[in-house]
Length: 388
Image (cartoon, rainbow, N blue to C red; front, side, top):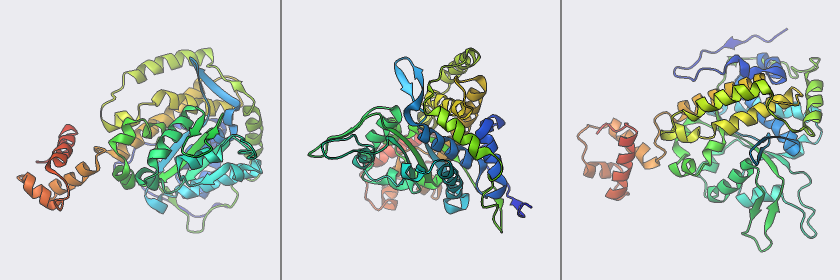
C-alpha cells in the first residue's frame, strides 16, 4: 500500500520538464519505481543515476569523434532551493542502488572537492613506494558547490577538472614529487541553489570553459510524503539484477559507434545545434551541447546493453540536454556574470532612475573606483538590464 502523498504545484517560471524520451529504458524504469516513494524530483534521480552509472563504467566504453574519445564520465550540478529541493534524497537513492549491486561502490565515491592537487592524488599513478590509487574511476559529490565557485582553490581546481572532463591525463607540478594520473575517469555531482549559482559564477569561469562542462539541472520537491515512502522501492522489481548485468557488459564494451539510422539523425541534429545563438551567458554555458549530448547517448546505450548508439539513445540524450539548457537559462536568467554589476543592478532597481555616478559610489560604500563601476554599468547595458 503506497504512502499518502500530496503533489506540489509547479512554481511560476519553472522550466518545462524533460520530454518523456529522457526516461528511456532501464534508467526510466528505475526512476519511476523510486518516484512514488520519494519527495525528490524524478529528474534529480535520473541525472544522478546517469552520472553514477557512467562513473562505474569508467574507461571501458567510449564514443570516438575524429581522434578524440568521449568516455561516459559526466559532470552535473543540481540547482534547487537548499534541502527543500531534496537533491540529497535523490542522490541517496542512487548511492544505495549502486552500493547494492557493487560492494566496493562506496570506495569509488568521495565527498567534497578540495584542491586540484587533491583530485589528482585520489587518482594518482604508482610512483616509487606509493602504490597509487587502487582504481582510476572516481565519483565526487559536492553538496556545497557554491564553495567551489567562490573559494580560493578554484584557480587550481578549474584546470584539473577541465582536463578530467576532457579525458586528458592529470598532472600537478606544485610538489617536490609531481603527481600524475593517467587514464583517470572522474565524474562529478554538485548541488547548489539558483541564488548561489548566480552570485558565485563569474565571466572568467564561463569564458575559460569551466562551467560549460557541467549539466545544470533544475530540481524541486515534487510531492509531500508525511510518512515517507518504501525503504527499498526496487525490491522484487528485478531492476537491480538487470542493472548489474548491463554494467558488467558496459565495462568491456569498447567503442560504440553510431547505428546507421542514428548517424543520419545525429547529422541533422548537429546542424541544428550549430545554428543556435551563442550570445550571452546562456550561450557560453551551453557551448558544449554536442559532446554532452553524445556522452549522455553513450550512457543510455550502455544502460541498454547495446553495441551501438541508436536513435532512441540520441533522443533520450537530447531530452536531457534540452532540459539542462532550459535549466541554465532559468537559473541564470538575466545575470551578467559580473558580481559588481549584479549588486549595482539591485541598487538601481530600488532607487530613482536619475541616480548619479557619485550617488551610486556612495551606495557602494565608496569601495570601488569609478572606472570599475563604469565597466559594471557597461555590462548591465550590454545585457539590457540597466534602469538608469
